[in-house]
Image (cartoon, rainbow, N blue to C red; front, side):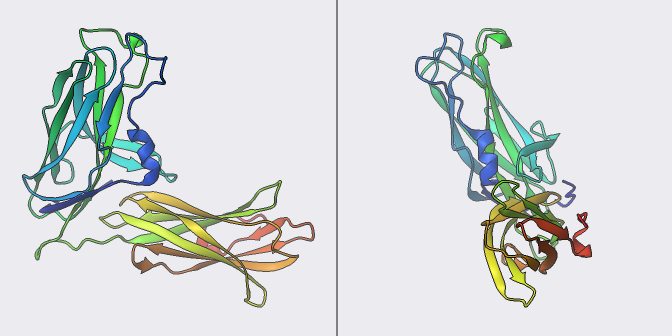
Length: 300
């Protein structure tokens, strides 16, 4: 993400539902914990709070629920996602300032004996004049104490705490906005049940995250609605693309020409709708003929 403006007030919320898989507590099934296993629990796995420069966020509680002592370290990475919402790490912050925001952990390194817990304070340091969003992921990494080798670890040793940090604009600061466009629309058909999936790929060119949602309507050649579906809801970070999809049930469309109209909302704003023309054959198979605005290839 290329956001170069510095900050003054923060708001942290969960990144996106699909990113929560990264932050699952490290666990093992009963009866499978070996004497070298790491079993740690972190709470919360996302943070929602509003702070000013210098305020503390959290705290984050880390518990050693396994059988061996653990050495733990906390690091901070800038977070992002691919089109499907899978987390990516575009750059390592290493507890350094990124986009006007510095998160420091207190403490950054500590040891937990079996059954022990410890609270970590997270402090936000905000540069003056910044407005927009930053998206750090706090990673808590554990290893058996006493220099045991990595190959002896029989459980995951890393848990992520996900955040969205938003900085409110002051009078002289740049306006916070999510500028979202639909870059392409894709229709696809299940070869077995003939159901139709519509995918809208959206790009956020603003300086703050936004929630994408919407509907897709199939209309016949007379403009009458023939089928309707809701698009999945997802959060899109600034500088990233995100795909939201909907599925039309099979068997609703007879042979003929149709138009799929995709209506996407980015937060409270509605994006211009994009029509996609297609034909249904006498055996229920799509023959696609995309509108030129979608930049998608045509089958015809």
